[in-house]
View 1 (cartoon, rainbow, N blue to C red):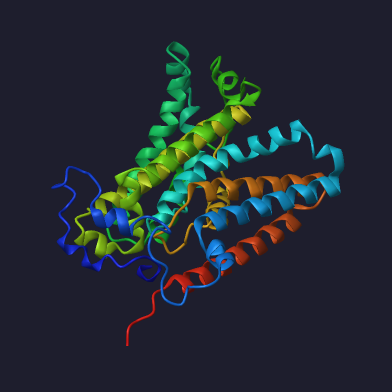
View 2: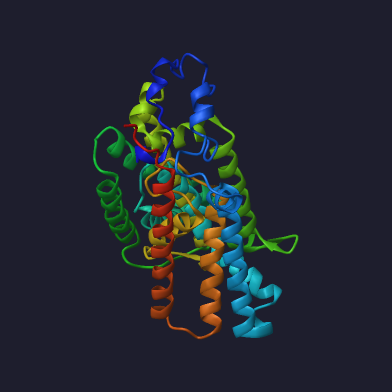
Length: 371
């Protein structure tokens, strides 16, 4: 993963973050900004090549893909696709997985992977819809259920992050273990039954509309904006990119890599918990099957959006577009009565193409070794 980012090995002279009051170091500003460094040798080309290799070019490419899918939808499904209700349906479909994907973007940018997000969505929805939680919410406010779901996700993410950062367990194995454990715990709590939401106002508040737009979509938009700000305009975001690009160099630069890694998984857990609260409102019931396979959809959206699987570069805008691409594509398939199997094959092919493009881009951005 260190081959895909600017070398921070000379960062040993940079004072630790504790000494600069939490402000980004000059090296963090230079080396940790995606696409801000000088183009490596061999990557020179004409203006079109440079544009396609830039963040702006990748974003424009995703927008072009989205437009092509919309055109294909209009051509095959006609006026039924080109309507406001269809647009609202697509955005609603994208909202929950979009929030989960924002958390996944931070984890992958930091050089990790989180396979437990889908199970945490299910566990959060179950915990927030237990009789005890709903009784407290009924006697106080429905937001207690949202807080419970987010807290469950945060604690689970914090545990996973601690196991990875301080237990030195590979992220793939640690999050796979959490995936299995969280799903099992959800089934144990619910006793394999669906828990209906009975608190007045919960589903009405989260499934209502503001200015004609569903509340769930507003939540997705706000989380995306917050994620963009956190990744691109804060020291936390720059350190995330630095840790994902070269953990050893980041450590030499004074970044507490283990603690930061734990925070990243906690953040992913928070997003999963919020996703659990959202899906609980949408289906009006908690179930251990809520969020099944969301981890694959979230990883796919993040990869399609342009975040490097190897870490060191992430884009919230790309993730949002990746989520919208998959949601729009799914709607086109449904309106054309294509089977789930066909949809899965098409999505798999898209993911393979995206990863191949990433590998090609990463190879071009790898500096040549001297001598």
